[in-house]
Image (cartoon, rainbow over all chains, first blue to last red; front, side):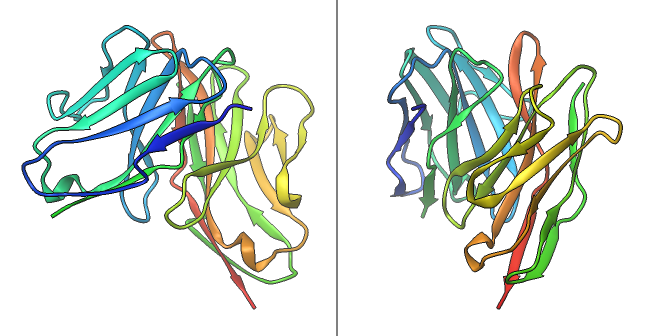
Amino acid sequence: GAVVSQHPSWVICKSGTSVKIECRSLDFQATTMFWYRQFPKQSLMLMATSNEGSKATYEQGVEKDKFLINHASLTLSTLTVTSAHPEDSSFYICSASGQAAYEQYFGPGTRLTVT
Amino acid sequence: AQSVTQLDSHVSVSEGTPVLLRCNYSSSYSPSLFWYVQHPNKGLQLLLKYTSAATLVKGINGFEAEFKKSETSFHLTKPSAHMSDAAEYFCVVSGRTSGTYKYIFGTGTRLKVLA
């Protein structure tokens, strides 16, 4: 149980375009979803937290207009990187928590490369 | 506030020898603690978790960790390292901030297993 999927697993886009990443909880209802960014050889950095039907809460220093998060249902959250630039290239990981709010279940990650 | 410190950024062991990855935490109340493993270009896999039950926690792949309140530690151990254990390991404490549980990640320990 507690499976989280991400799509796509790998994406290349051109500078200036937007890319959407989906995060789904497959077998549970996710009351809260989280988006992380991970640079090579570094730990995960929390970007934002979202609850279904509410606006996302962004961490300090994360541009909300650049990283648009939508949590439209209890099983789906999306992250849209708008007007992507090479510095946005990174590994993006989502997670979700259900009834046990203290534990998160992680997706497999999405590798974004902006050329 | 919660925090977690992984005391070693890199650990090297020979195959077949014991593994010890050290983690200290800070928490104003009884914490939930986790160890995750991340192989290159992969998502996070849960190894084990402590949620105020037994202080010695057994996880997958022969790993275990002991919660020691007096030492504020949650070190990860394995009796005999395998080549497949080479990966990045993250110690995590789950803490509540503004009504939402969030993960606080350690900086990670890279485990190298020598043949």
